[in-house]
Image 1 (spheres, rainbow, N blue to C red):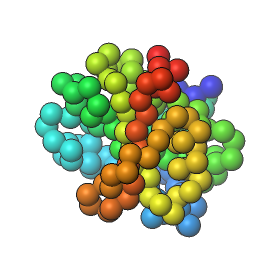
Image 2 (tube, rainbow, N blue to C red):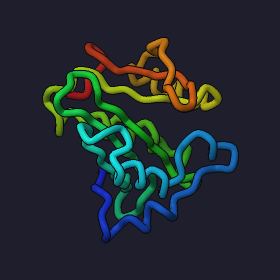
Image 3 (cartoon, helix red, strand yellow):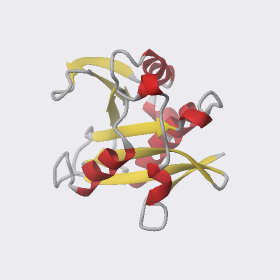
Length: 160
């Protein structure tokens, strides 16, 4: 079982110790970058930026960050999600995405869509997201020009 714990002064160093495989390093922001994006509210003041460590038992196996606009129906984003290289291949990625979706829905009753961006070259992650019900929107993220994906009803409702 995986659980998400908010990142704070007591555990942020565990996030910094997480690493990707060398070939994955262009797919996910480094941990310090993800924390900085949350700290400065990179998507805007109207968004709640929340970083979480992903734990399997007592061990941090990854992290996820979300950016959610509680005044919106569809501006709920999985900003970054990462599983440590040593922990990959154990089903933690699928469980972590599902738990992050469930957490967003628990925090934000108004949520009617969850979105994310996935680098084109990250075909493994894209396949995972689509297997959970995300669909490509046909739009591109403005900074990197990578495709956006969206999870909406009825696929979203499976996580409620």
